Length: 437
Image 1 (tube, helix red, strand yellow):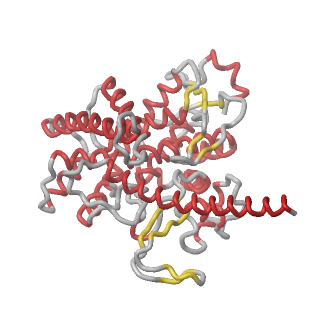
Image 2 (tube, rainbow, N blue to C red):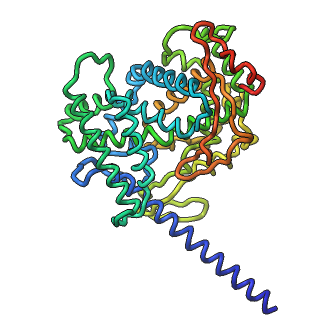
Image 3 (cartoon, rainbow, N blue to C red):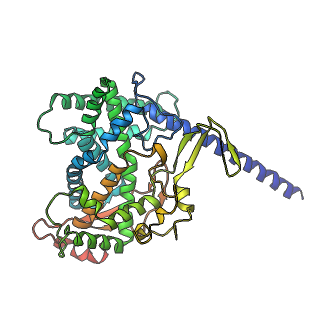
């Protein structure tokens, strides 16, 4: 009896400790997201800081005039102008992956890819490759320490993060000044151009500090979550070769891929990508099963009741994207990767509201979601039409959810190039065809 009593006391103490830990975790995590927003900005920056939101995606959660600016940055016209540049960046990256003699770490390389896309396409910076590589390393150090506790001590993560931000902002200021001085020869307006022009239209001449902070925020928005989704896309194409082949069949049917496997000439267009229904289903299913982040925070504007519980005005509440996707009754066999669930015949996501929300929902839904989906679609098209790849490890890696969803070892994959003349697998890789997707 004594031992049973001790076990009961121990169990109750453990339960109490768990409840306290969860409460503290939720409170601290919300504060850290707010600190994350502040960490990208200098104290002198006058751009508004959002309240009651975890800050993902970061774009679309600022003041009214900035919302209008971001609406232009991710408008249909803007996306159409970004598309050729995004395609070129992805093509160049896939060629580099294919020419690499060893397997690559997909998650790490996807981070480099999304960083390059943000710098080259979204911001229009002409930074030399060597400087770009160094800037990426500094940026990684910044990101790794963004969520550190705000304890400014030597060798602390917070101090390293602040130092990395200062180094980043020096590099960004140099790039911004060079960009402002060189206005000729551009064939499109990038996000930074639109930010500057729109702020002037609203009578808000942005300072250099605000330009640096806004630039850093745009990079942050386009970086981690898109790299996570890109890695998940590649992993699922590896796991499900029938999905990849069906995607190739759709490309052939739309005249984008010859029967021999050779990609047809011509740059992609938004209307062309919009017509690829199965491609859209694949991207939706990746984002359903492998949403980069778990959820978000909101502030209660007025007291309301939910399932018999009263939620007071002013409280912060958290919604879970992953739990919603896992428990939504509209999805059948929720653990199965099945892009056809989003087909016109089934349309599982159309039954009811807020069952599918990889980009959040309501008035604070992600304004950059169309850019993210565009990037993933172009990546999928290029992977299906120009790449052959295989898993380089014996098994698929375990997935971790912190800070964003990604494979614990980054996903080791060997890419094989296609000959530029014959467009066939290079002879030295023919022995590996049996294991190649």
